[in-house]
Length: 251
Figure 1 (cartoon, one colour):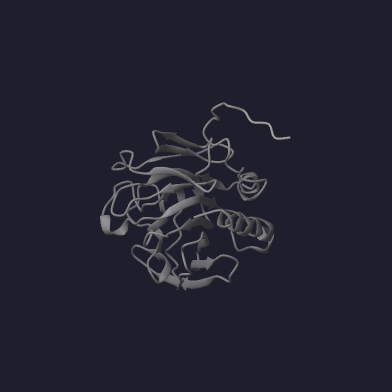
Figure 2: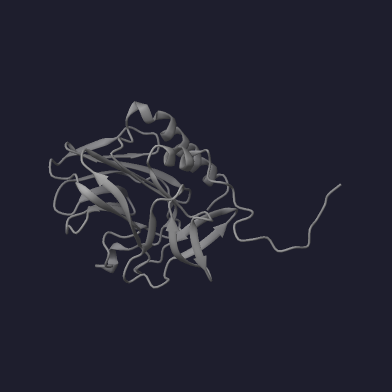
């Protein structure tokens, strides 16, 4: 027998939970994880007004020129932040203090063209930043005034996990569960209070050609955490599983 209820469900009621999975496991380790899933993602009339980190503690607010440009989309049961090409759709958040290592991760897709800027980190008040970007061929991690490292970009009609680390030795970048590649840059690590950026590089939009049309599912910032450490094998595996779960239903 099948029972039916003729009622309206609240927003997000049919969306899958974000884990003990990656997000909640990560939050317990001090990771600042932003998900497009409610209730953390605040939405009004389809526009994303802010994103509270899983487990609380930090809120990503729209950058100066993001006046409701980022759309919240649910497709095939999966929620994502929809960025518009050459439009300021980004967010910024205080993610904590850094002294020795900083990692971050993004789960995204780009079925409509390059996502360009996915995420960035910068010491509070600094002009320099480290940005994770995607174009038609490569995923790239680069410091504005320093080193750059890239890996070949897989097909992006399905979600992809990208992992990045910055430390005293420079920049490290990996796609999914692949091994990280490295570029030396002894000045790369931002120290002290650090800001994290989602879908942009700075508080101001800057060059609109750096802003693309990505679908962002999850963005995680990890102050004082080495995402490639063997101690985080379980968390990385959970991130890979999260990406595969999204891909089973999206894009």
